[in-house]
Image 1 (spheres, rainbow over the protein chains, first blue to last red):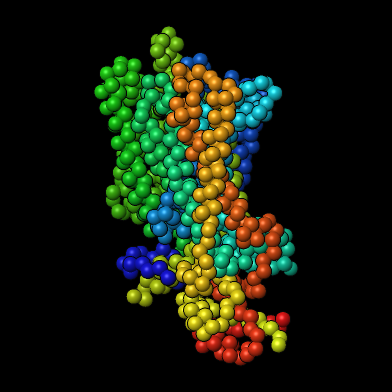
Image 2 (image 1 turned 30 degrees about the vertical axis):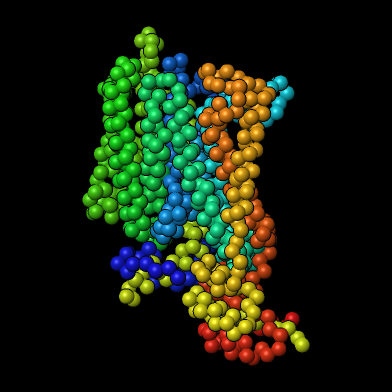
Length: 459
Length: 173
């Protein structure tokens, strides 16, 4: 059994027994959805359908349906892509990196964070797919022998690295998630009665792969989890580094910086944790997980947000310094224009939401408040979206030739597709919250006797 | 002599762990232990060999790395060398810095997926598989120890009770 310092706050509140955990975690799956679930689900569904229509319109008429022009030839599509990929980073960080560091608090949140990762990456993948214009030719991005002679993909290109990185990240995250889900599906299977819920019983029997919890299986389970965590950790860092190289290996002032890979990875963790908080603060109420997702969990995440937010701020300032220090006037102008040009407001939103407001977490009363955390996490989500917008649009809209300087304004369709992916994300997440064990109960049971409140109070 | 199977049910992982040690010390063979979550130290207490999952992952990773290198070599160097931004393209090792990301991704891709598939196969898990746990409560809150007894059943039962089993069920073979 693991030992834990007595003065640490309990991670599971309310003297839960193993059976209580089973009951609490299967409740959302067994019960009926409440009113709020249906309201949220309907809203998300409407957004999703709207998004699908806008995507269909784009595919039907072409990329001209977007607000892009010859100068700003990359805007909301890549902004949204990077934003979603960034959100998809916290899940694997929580499940992999925190597992390697033996952080017990990850156990209550890793399942939902990984779900968020998978659904977030799925949204991200939609953008390059639509931007291809002819998504049915998407298989061109893979090195498949073809009838055009030797028409191969270019292995020197960061865009191809992205294809490999994101598909690997997505599929490995799904596998990691599923390996952990098997014992929990088995728990649901064994709770379902074949008489009252035959369909559910069959479904969970199918999904649980016949898991029975033998000692040897658990031994392999733990080793496989550990190795997957070890593999996923460098993978997380590689994915966003590679995304940043889409920009950094180009020769556009404002993109061509060596600080990009760490800067993007930190930004991704920052925005990912913020999104985890936004989702979990809602979820703990909607599916009654207050005993498992406690203010302590939120506080730990707030500390990570404070750290990564400060590092992101450092990166912004480093970037400014380096542009001045480079002595390259194009580079200097790119940053001057970012901060004081026509897009100054986007830069100001980015600076405020990413650098200034997270500093409020130095106050423990704010760090330990659900309401404040919820509001600040939304700020971070907004700020990180603007960070990508600032990097992408302000670097492009005033290029080397002043006669081609222009502004970007999103079209109706741009906005529709973005809102559509938000809708799609929430549709998936809400369905997940009703059909999956939202907390890794098997792992959580293993820490009840060291981190549960009953055992903390005994001492 | 008939073979009987005894199922000792435990409520607590600490009691179970102590019981496993004591029962094995008394030369009684434990056939299997079913538990709702991984119990640390149970594999050692049961005398299970160390798992080789990590070794398989290493081997699969090496396969992934080699295949990726081979694929890129064939495409970029042998089949159709291209001059891209003046990057060296006549030999693999000159061009390799640009190939590292994809070689790394392929390593992870192969290691993670093939290890997971090996894990499922070795555990006999597949979509729609049937659980062979003798008691459905083992995925909830009970720990089950399965012992096959030839001969004196009463002794083993007494042993299980003594070590803290809260319930003992019997199945005739």
